Structure formats: C-alpha cells, structure tokens
Image 1 (cartoon, rainbow, N blue to C red):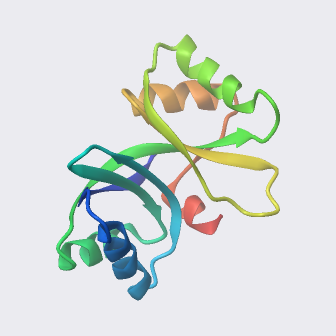
Image 2 (image 1 turned 45 degrees about the vertical axis):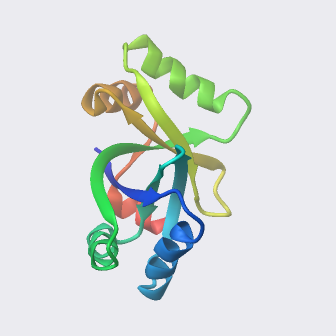
Length: 144
C-alpha cells in the first residue's frame, strides 16, 4: 500500500517556488505535505496532495517538470520514541530509508504522519503492518 508523491524540479532562482505554488493555489490544490531540497542550480520539491492527477496536469501545463513516485504514508505514534519505533521496525528488516518528511494530519489526531521513501515498499509495508503500524492509502490520506 503506497501513495503517490509528486517530485517537481525547479530552477534555483528567486520566485520559482512561488510560481509553482501559485499555479497550485490557482487550481485549488490542497498541499498535504511538502519537502524542499536544493543544490546551487536546482531544487526538488516533493509534494503530497489531495488530487495527484490534477496536480500533475496543472504543473505540466504551467511548464514544470514533475515525476510520480510511490512512497509510504505511515501513522507514527505522537509520543516520545514513536518515530524511533517505526525506524526500528524498518531497520530490523533491512529496509533502507532514503528520505522522509512529515505531512499534515487532522488537528484532533493523536498521531503524526510521515512520508517514507524506502528501497523496498512491499517489504517495509509488510513489516510495519505485522507490528500494527498503520499505512495510509491515497484515499485515507486525502481525508486527514
């Protein structure tokens, strides 16, 4: 079980990130999560959104280069050591975490939510589910 992440390649220049978010705002796309990594020449914005296909179309029409990646959206207990527990499960199965970032959840939730890009989604999801860690699908993620 995975969700779609959109990775957008941006020039590293003033205003480029604003142009991208303006295109999304104009299309009334709800950002659920965002991560930005940069180099001196370009940046990669990773997005979790409410409507993946519409977002991909909006970005393409606005002239941005984007790709889709399957990632895991994981419910993490919002207590000290909650993330460590999840990482321990992944570590015990030999799954490598390539990157991760937090996403927005329901204000009333007692959980935190993280996006994990791992080297083996199936193996990671199976290990987490065996330990009763909730993996969100695209529909559930949109409801948070």
